[in-house]
Length: 91
Image 1 (cartoon, rainbow, N blue to C red):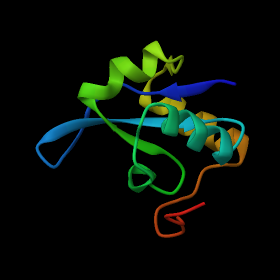
Image 2 (image 1 turned 90 degrees about the vertical axis):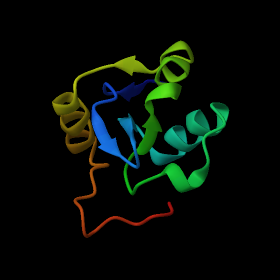
Image 3 (image 1 turned 30 degrees about the vertical axis):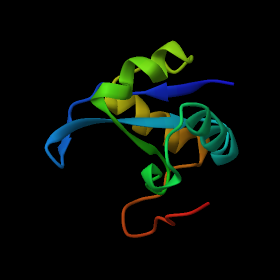
Image 4 (image 1 turned 135 degrees about the horizontal axis):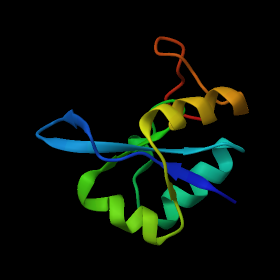
């Protein structure tokens, strides 16, 4: 099981955010996020939005640090990428 996270560089709601993704399945992603205590509402169609103060927790739990472009590449190559406008909030 490998999960990937990009650096917390995405601004929103007065803080910076990372994206947590799987290159295998949404089930794997949901299990990992649940283990971190992340609410399901943080799931944004094909990734979890992770606030900067939880970044180190995700890495300590085993998420591999990659760049933002690599996150998108991994999602696309796995077939898990959902372009904006076509994302389902719950899967």
